[in-house]
Image (cartoon, rainbow, N blue to C red; front, side, top):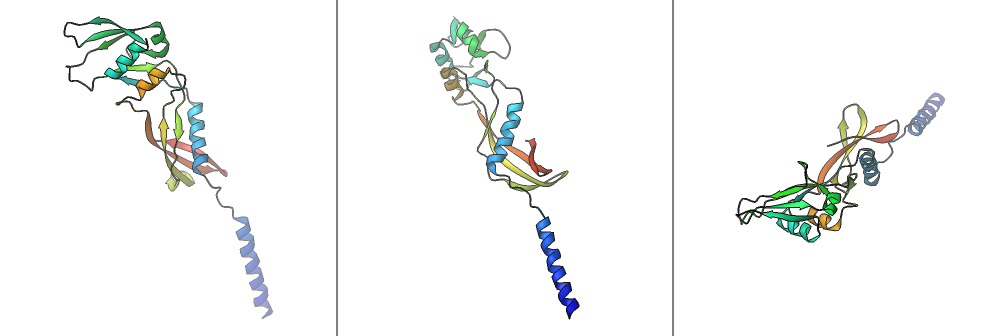
Length: 193
């Protein structure tokens, strides 16, 4: 009987040591995950923002003196707009040069746009991380994934260009997914899709 008691005590102590020796993975909160994603964005080179300029945007740019109309064609629909010195500080044209060629198909063409790029380049911004989900990630014992919103950063852009960027047709944010893995007791960002 004494042997059974001794064996029972040893079993309980062994279980206790095993429980104390096991460490659980540190928690990864959405706030911490978002900080890891933003740190990655901050390490990458800043990017210019592509802005689609519709008819409302063309008019706003003229009013703000970012560009001025230099030529109207006989069909009264087409026009050329030259970037002003102030406009050259705010935008570049994808094909180079300094003339925006406005060429809608017809008077009813409300979807016509031209593309400009901001001179100011900024780091992308991550926000609105959803709750994290456990996942299987090749080469990682413990992994999580989270969906979040990636947005452009218009800091330093003239207000009129910021307003034009918010016109219909512009895509200022995208839903993305980030994968995280626990490595040596620390959560690391593995990929962004």
